Image (cartoon, rainbow, N blue to C red; front, side, top):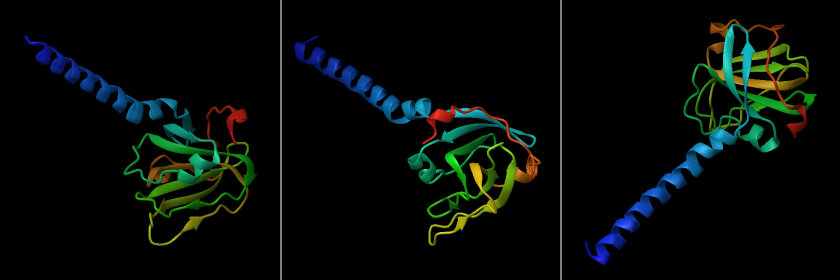
Length: 160
């Protein structure tokens, strides 16, 4: 084998390794670093990503093309308020569940439709500390009701 062939082989190997590392950093690492928790709500058990700061709460599920039936987004806020959930730029319908400081279900919106043309925002009728976004139809299929209590663990000091 000539020196130039050895150099070419080494460059190919280096390029493949670089591509694998780059793919890991871009696609896998963010998933590994996203905080999550097990969430029990109604008859369902979900793996919930936690949106615990203003940037992650504002992004929510924007850009997601789907949400598996056992997945959820749990938005944790630093204080109780009538937190609104905007459907602007969403691409999937969702069920939205608001929880108070005791994790009790206080308000539900079923099958909130995505709408990129106008800003539709859903608000609870009273103050909430947490908001859970689930695949559309989950509230009915998992018997989630007003007054029910969610179970999950969070590090409260991480909520900003």
